[in-house]
Image (cartoon, rainbow, N blue to C red; front, side, top):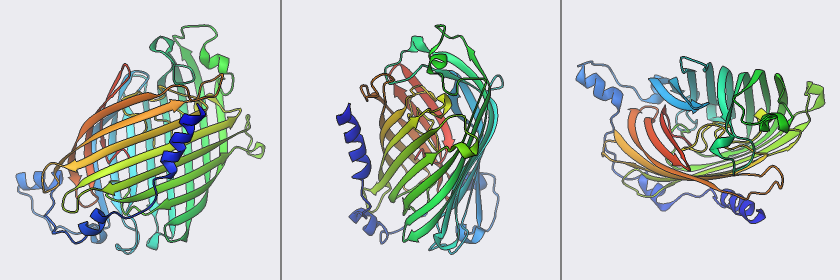
Length: 398
């Protein structure tokens, strides 16, 4: 539906950068001493150390031995390690972060991933990136937003992904840059398909034993968040246009456009009460390989669609919107909670229209894991249509 697509895009771009009165007043509000899980454990074990602020300490680590995600109907256990640090003057340089994510389900899924978001001194350069190598099993249901549980079948494959971007400051919080994207899917196998040929084989692009895509991206970015791990205010907005030219030995010629806007609004000058809004449009055009199509939890960052398994919905175009209310339960910031809701719509394979919406909602608990980097331990339950997901991790979803 053209009206539906227009509504989504309007939601994305009407979230304009502005500072709320609550944000201004919060800077002058009396500060309450914060605590975190590390401090609680240190006190319980009677360990003493000299505390240093993040800017002086330079690197702040957070680690949990087990977090969770799902793929192929299986729960995957992820060991999440987060390192946060500042590469320049603390008052004029954003917090950089690196996530290390080894994972397995002790059966068919095993892999390692790392995600980086670096800010050089004075925020002159922003360098986001991702590297992943894995052996995975993933359920797929065909294309569009109206696929049924009975349509599901397994895809087994190995994957190597390397995404790196360099964005240079143009003025204030605006950046422009170039990126390199490489995807390789190999040893692709279909398992337990309900029909022959199945929807994967009928799609016919990037559905062989191996699929490679090498792309160049052109990027625009606005980001005035101080800390992307757990933003308390600000706006993030990016445009990523990807081309996969023949001179990079691509088997298929295709392009994609990804628009992503996130707004964080402080609702109270004295307490942590934050409304977080996220809207995105992801379109792909041309002979797009099946594994490069937009889909649930397949976008950069892989955070969309809490309440649904990864790749539950897939199509040539995707519209997404999510809102989340974040608040502290204890004044010292140790305990908090969130409630959230999201909707997604994928274009239908025959009409290319957005004809159906798939909603989800849920709630979660927050435990301040590391107050130096403002990293939370997150425990969320999400409920979709005939679907449920439980998530444990480090850092906010968006």
